[in-house]
Length: 328
Image 1 (cartoon, rainbow, N blue to C red):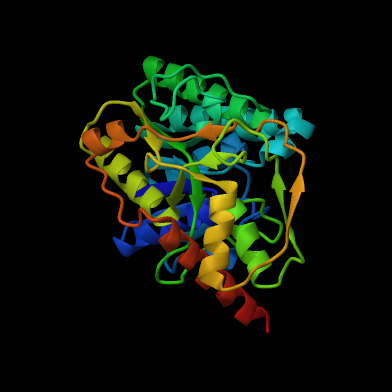
Image 2 (cartoon, rainbow, N blue to C red; image 1 turned 90 degrees about the horizontal axis):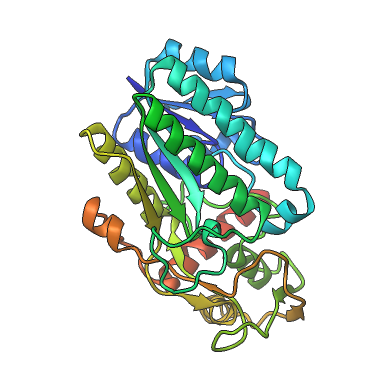
């Protein structure tokens, strides 16, 4: 039996593949390599270059490799881009996910883990925000993920399919062993952008908005180390394999940092006082969003190991320096 990882050559997906291969699991990766990299794949993983929306291809992989579970990462994830191109995001994130779910149902796959996002909450009325809070996304990205969650829920009600939805907060950092990290050249993730600026890869960086209703006026986010996020996926897979019921879990630490606090941490740990410019707020960005992670800790016994902004930033710095050394 094997696990199918969609988007497994990307940032988070490649870390998942590493974790599965570290346990000698049979892993099949489906990735169109639009943002993923062949070299990010763990040894022994089977790479199929193709589109998750190709229902016939997904079904063929299920049958050929005896897929027992699907971990679905493949998606477009940039909030401002989704505002500019909503139909592209609904096609890529929602329509194609529908085709993948249909192939799973037809192929008899009984377990699925879906990569969702805290963006489904929008500007929550209370923070930390729990899984039963109202879903009020502010962007087409968040709405595309919310719609996919609903499709998965309804499909599981009608068919013998159990799932776990993991709502990510802000993922950052890199594999502690230096095997993978955020490699997308034009990534918009705050910590990667700040680290690249500290290392001289960007002349300066921008802070989008400084008059939010937060302590220092900049957006507050709950940052989670990518390795801890993968630990949540591993716990979710074990839960499903042991017959656990379908469920939804937040993936965060339960405390947040502002944009300026993150920048200060990068400056301190890199030893570089780089240039920061203020810019207008971006459409679709909530002021503050922090996870209530009690459910995943209780139900899946998830225990994060890298719960520190400094730890996240150090690993991101180490990975970016590694990328620079490869280019030199």
